[in-house]
Structures are given as C-alpha cells and as structure tokens.
Image 1: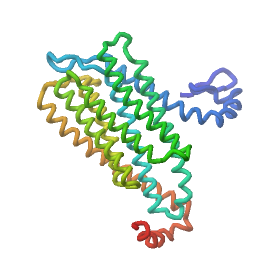
Image 2 (image 1 turned 90 degrees about the vertical axis):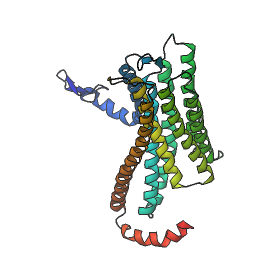
Image 3 (image 1 turned 180 degrees about the vertical axis):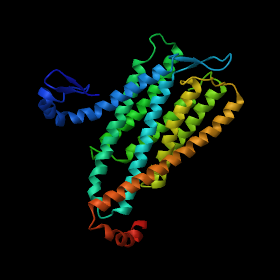
Length: 339
C-alpha cells in the first residue's frame, strides 16, 4: 500500500521511500540488494506463516481431543510448516523434471541454451532448501515453551533430528555442484538417508498415543519410507524419469498428509474435535490417505500440461527458424536416445 507524505510528494510503500528525494538512492541500491532480498524474503514469510499457524492453534502446545482423551502434544504450526516445505520440494522437483524432459523432446536444437539454466537451478535448489531447514529449526526454537516437560523436549528433538538430516542433504547438494571432486551421486544417497531417518523417527514418535494418532503417523512413515526407497533406487537406475516422478509424488503426499495430520489432531478452524479412539475414524483416514495421493497426481497432471504449453510457446518464439526442424530431429535421434 503506497502513501504520500508532505508537499514534496515523496512516496513510500512500507519498505522504504521510492519517490521524491529518496528515489535516486533507491534506484542505485536496487540492483545491489536484489540478491539479498531473494534469500531474505523466504525466511521472513516462512517465519510469519509459522507465527500465524501458531496463533490459529489457540491452545498453543496441547489440545484435548474427544471425550476423556489425554492431551495431544504438539501444535498445528509444527506440522503445517514442514508440510508446506515438503509440498514445495515435491512441486519443484516435478516442475524441473517436466522442464528438462519437455526441452529434450520439444526443443532439441535449443536445448544447449538451457543447460546453463538447469545447472544454476541445481545450485539454487540446495540454497533454498537449506534456508527452509534453518527457518524450520529457528521457528521451533523460538516458539517452544519455556517450561516444557521432558517428554515434549524429546519430541521436539525428534523434529530437529529430521531437519538435521535434510539440512545435511541440502549442504551436500550445494557442495556437489560447486566442488567437482565430490561425486554427484552423494546427493541422492543423502536424500535417501533423510527420508529413511524421517520414517524411522516418526514411526517411534507416537509413544503412549491414541489409535488414530498412531495411524496417521504410520501413514506418514509409509510415504516417507517409500520416498527414501525410491531415492535409493535412483542410485542404481540413474536418469530414470519414472523414479524421479514417483519421488516427487511421494514428497508432495508427505506434505499434504502433514497438513491433514494437523487438522485431525488440533482442529485449528474449530468445529467438533476428532475422537482419536474411534475405529471408524481410522477406517476413514485410510481412505483419505488414498484420496490425498489421487489429488497429488491430478495436481501433477495440471502442472505438466501448463509447463509443457509454456515451453512450447517459448521455443516457438525464441527459435522460430528452427522450430520446423524439430520433428525431423526427433525422428533421427529417437533410435539413438533409446539405445
């Protein structure tokens, strides 16, 4: 929102003056500060998102579910924020895979021009994901209770351990694409370890909990274990687009299920609470887990159509003289690519 001060007509928009006397200063600093803004805004908005989710959960760290049920430890924000991170990771991987595949199929002649872009995205991927991990760890430490029980501390360290392994993967991802002596396959190995540790941690995260609470965590462990298994198979079958797509879908599933888990355990929008000892709720959530996976593939299909259309349009406009040769190039190189 822009407002105007005084007679000089200087304008400001909440981030600093952009008009009048300060306009030239802003213009000079704009090019120098854009890099820091790109990396600072994700931290800022992630922090604000976690703070908002914390306010939604009015009971802060404990919530009573059902009649005569013990209190559920944790909060909605602690599940929604990593869920948003997993959804972002899965969608980013999927978009990158579709971009790479579409450029190869639809724009073979222009593909060499896009190699530098994909190399930069690999490096940026590690930086952004490392920022997500640091944001999650910071939010957990800031919003933790000052007088929490020993059990709550241990459960919080469960989450921090998961963040630790994904942070190691992001760090290795950055190093592998900047130091040539480090083998690239190490990134897939660390990613597989991160998913498998995530599954192991949350499988043992439900000590003394109710039936429904245990079930939703077990389903989360199933998705994480399958994602880790697929990431490990990518070490054996390199450049397999099927495995990459499967890993992306399972990562998105983990993110969406973390949001579902938060709504089941903490009901942040109000309404009747879930009975965590009801067998019917367990049966329904098993079906709901399958629905989440189906919706994941619907979203991936829509994204695939949109990305493919954008790439075709871009190739047609950037390489109009070569666009007519694409079909012939595809026929000539089809057999060689299959070999």
